[in-house]
Length: 79
Image 1 (tube, rainbow, N blue to C red):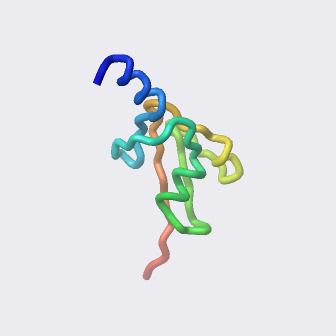
Image 2: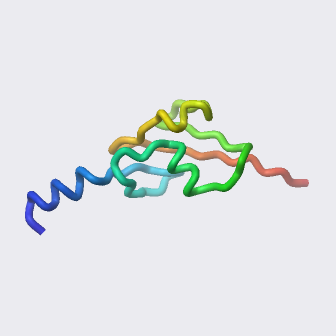
């Protein structure tokens, strides 16, 4: 692939870390969209981007960028 082709590919995706695992996401992906692909939980989910907790109401407005570190916590009940 040419250098120009490499630049186009890079412009269409970003590399982020999700719970310590590297992932390539389409550029423009927001936190809400990422969480929707990773969990079906309707409640009990918390998320942080770059060590800052993001309230559920801000997930759709939080666009993920190159190098962002996302941590997702899912509460589970047990006994």
